[in-house]
Amino acid sequence: MSIAQQLIILATFFLTSSLSAQDENGAKLFNDAKCMRCHTGAHFQAKENKVNSLPELHNSVNACAINTNTTWFDEETKEVVHYLNNKYYKFKD
Image 1 (cartoon, rainbow, N blue to C red):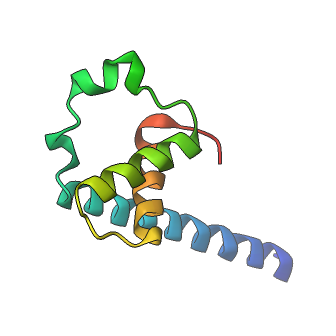
Image 2 (image 1 turned 90 degrees about the vertical axis):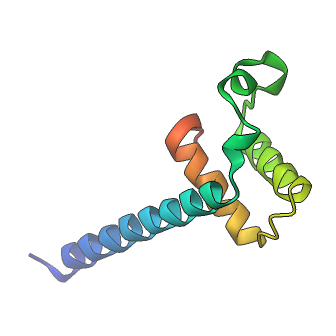
């Protein structure tokens, strides 16, 4: 196996590891903030609440973070967006 192949394998491993760590932290932040207290199944089915893009998802998460005083840093908000997108929405980055 060439050095280039080994580097590609290592880079893939580290990328995958960081993505799962980002999802784990996003999930923890989401759960710790008790987001599902307000966001019931009915909330997500209402047409006026539908999120149609990754920027809309980010804006929605950011608005909730501000309204509930989560005190998340920008990076933490991004982690929650990433988690929600990977778990539910599946928007392309």
